Length: 470
Image (cartoon, rainbow, N blue to C red; front, side, top):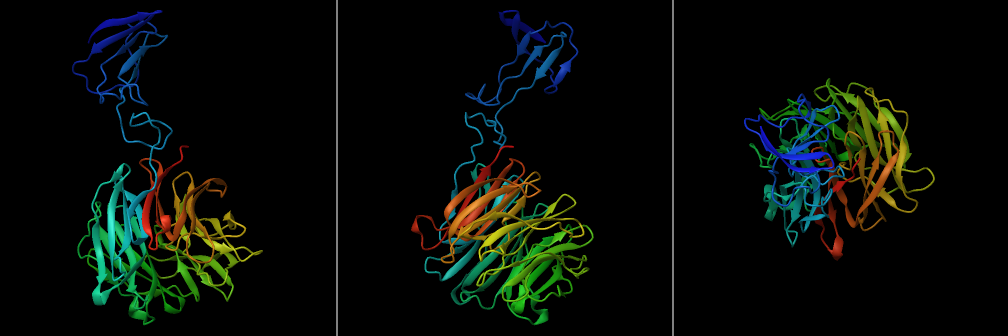
């Protein structure tokens, strides 16, 4: 090492020096008894021009402590921005994740998932004359759009129809599983569909597949929820007359397992099944009469056959003319968290409820975490309105009057114990379809929704990242 003193003031010596054969930055105190307390040595900054001493960025330096030993401070150059209250990319701004981003016009039914550093957003695009529709996916990085639209499926001409109830989920094998319902424009002849995308949102062979839930002969599909483990998928549907069934699907050989009914009458909506190591956990809402409903959960074996009678989490009154939305089930420690929309006993308005369950699906009770006096509240019609971040729960909800199905979209953050941390309004023109994901790399939420801002007659799809430093 060669060094020479460049600054000496008030007993502090700053030296500029060069290393040869350095194997990388060192940290902590090193054994060099030759330094004098408060001596400082530094090397030239290697980062981009204009970023030194901006935000977290600085050149390598070491300072001699009171014991005559060097303490090293490795160089910091710009890196991707994180939600931590710091200027990580050294541009003079902190936690800048931008405003909402327009994804597509004449579009709705968005869904979002996060993996491999990027968001994957899928949605339905409608032709201007509503004579055709397309199912589109695109990847977005935390810094902006990075891929063109990927066409997954389309319906036009004599086959024209809708795609709805989209759900995209990142898997442990760096694949994206995508499920949806397709139907004719009058919502007849509905079918459940399924596809697998690679990590860049490209459609993988054999392409979109129709899930044959017709073994029971019950009829059209209203909704499908897809669970995933390392070897197979569990596909659960709701068909006509509120019947719900589950069966496994092996994507490697394109085979379906036996079709098992859940066996509960009056099921109106189901959660995404979660693999619990020995089988599956699923929750649902069901009708017990004209006004009375309840939310229950049950355990299934690895093939989707019911193992236990349902544990009723709670019962509630659901306002007339409102379909119960899919409960949002998610892993929380060794147990689960669950959110849903339910009626309050003193009014016909809705609230968002939260309950924590143990691994045997036992609960200490439901807590209303979002409630308004005169406005109906929805947790998202595709059941993707809740996410567990590892330290808090994010819940999307929409406050609205009966018609049209538009209102104010908000994100509410609560603790695992159900205490509200904060709430932020996102849009005053939201439709009733939205989804949320968590970017663990950057510590931010990724939210997408259908929006009618600026007086649009057809919705547009928007996306926004939300940062809340701990």
